[in-house]
Length: 112
Image 1 (cartoon, rainbow, N blue to C red):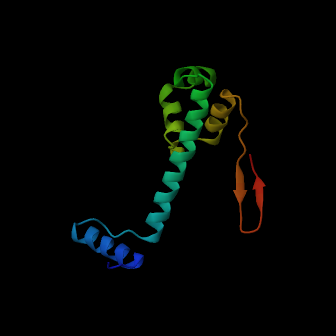
Image 2 (cartoon, rainbow, N blue to C red):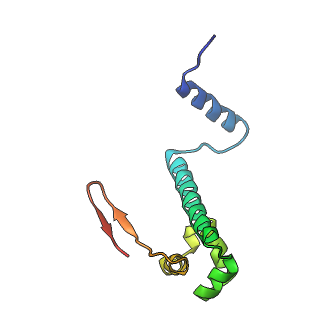
Image 3 (cartoon, rainbow, N blue to C red):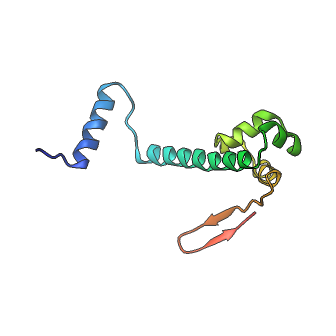
């Protein structure tokens, strides 16, 4: 049985991507991708809370006074188009309270 080091597998995969004409991914690209994935996971959890409370997107939108697509944006993790006030209203419509925390190396602060 032969083994291959993980670093070699990653290098070969990157070479195959480049050979196929895909752009080279930088560490910044990977970090941005991870942030998008994290946003989608968190948003999915919010949608699970809504469903567990037997609320539809339409009902939450009516409570908030916003359109259905705005709720969809929240629940798909499109945080670049959702303001803190909309996110707060969404969480409150589900009966929760939003906390926004700024995290630094050795401390964190609730900012909203």
